[in-house]
Length: 216
Image (cartoon, rainbow, N blue to C red; front, side, top):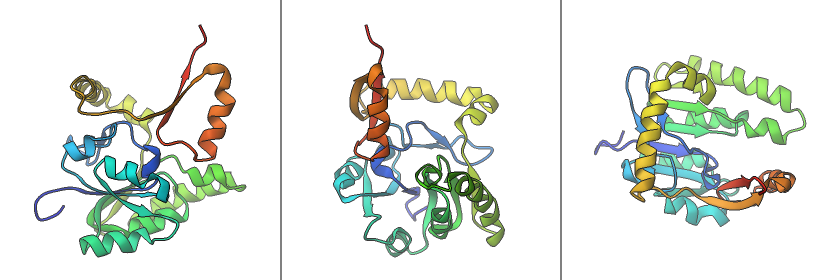
């Protein structure tokens, strides 16, 4: 954390609205990371950086983050230059070689959370990329005594900690009712256009979530 107690978080792919749920960071404590909706990070007082293409930098700023252009900037160098010793948490949905770079952005005591592994979806050797990413995530902590890494699986976590989800859902619904958070919806499409929805997602042409509506 910073000297004023603020948590530092680096979010890869922040322009796509990656985390629409609260995250529990450390075993044994109920630490809520403010990443649900657009403003919860700011509400929680988290110092955030987010990698995104230049066209999505305004979105990163709108959720209280500092944008990093992943096409022209080294995100590890940027956060280390800004913080001096790295960040407390990296949320990485890309995987593969990005896991190594994300781990290098952590400060002592920091944690890398991997999920999604979009690299496995976009690469022809998807299965190998996926398996390699899991292996790398397990091996990285062996290279450092003070930094950790783990895989986030919402299904497994929900089965293990149902009470967390009940509590967090109640808080999120109250924040939504109070208009403190504003979920970002890119498009609303009829269910029959599900193919188009997938095409939009694969092209990275949307900012936010796509909602599929059942036909009347």
